[in-house]
Image (cartoon, rainbow, N blue to C red; front, side):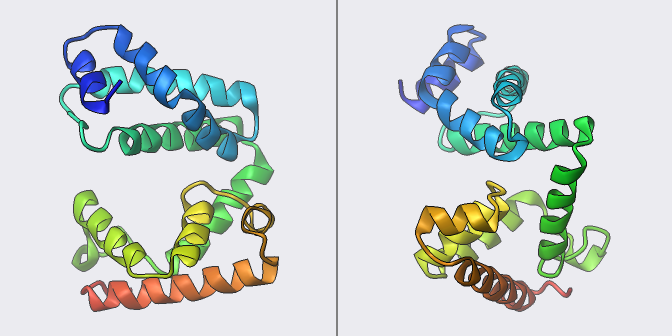
Length: 186
């Protein structure tokens, strides 16, 4: 079923919307969640929580043209919150490590001169990602969106871990420069 029709089912408060969402995107959503929580059962719980969150979010949102991105963002946030609640220290340390890496590039939300609303920031990031080499973009997204480890990325793309680390370091530096050119001071 097309995304627009699924969203219409949500708007009409038709419960088959959840079933259609599960059929079309369930395995992809579990994969995103499992990459974060590293537990199949917890990923399934996060998936179910995502369906409830989507049910409560549509309306007012009508993500007809970006439905999967809407779902992925919700399940990612739910999965990250699940990690925080379970206080899995090793996993939390990993998330803190990734946050620290990105803090070097992205302006502080407390800096009023660099406050960017979510839509503008998303557009800026999309322009940045569109302007870099596809392989580097995939590595960057796997690391900072899907939270894959360097070893997992290395295996996925059949490159050395050193190459992955170097690519991430250089891409973060390019991101920092790009954001500064866009008017964000770090």
